[in-house]
Length: 189
Image 1 (cartoon, helix red, strand yellow):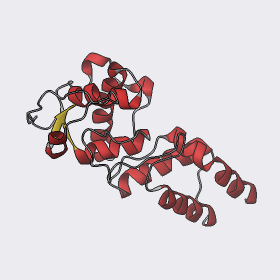
Image 2: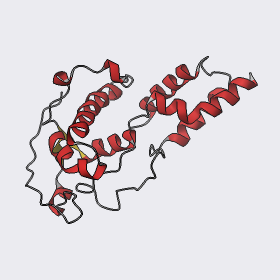
Image 3: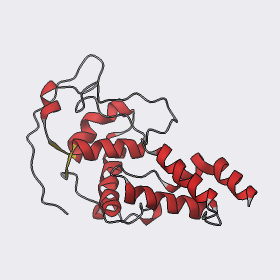
Image 4: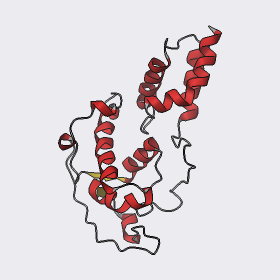
């Protein structure tokens, strides 16, 4: 794991809306996973423990994706005590990629409001779906598609991880998003 850099984080007061907000955090370059979970969980309406666990898994997966490997499935993760530590530091870019992968809103306490995009529930926030769809269409037109939807989704996930800096969507997300298009191409063959 990369050398950890400690970033100073002052105690953040509560706002009337119940979200942890403080203007000085917008200029902090790195925050620990623990601090992010602590200040973000109310906005997400999830427990702090769940947010922290997802962030720790995200760090592990990001290292795998950058090494050209695929995302770990839930059952493939090591025990919680073997995940990256809670004091692991991450930057804005990492957290933005994590938000895109999880389709979670960016934390208001750390991102400027113009960088925070508001997505409807259930809508994919991954910015590269058009490119992935274009690759699927190209493969379908060239008769290069895998024999099963799962195998094709696995290929597309690896392709997206290799070609884009953002974290790739999960195989499940790709299967659900492109099931109809995959079926149309396969029925034409």
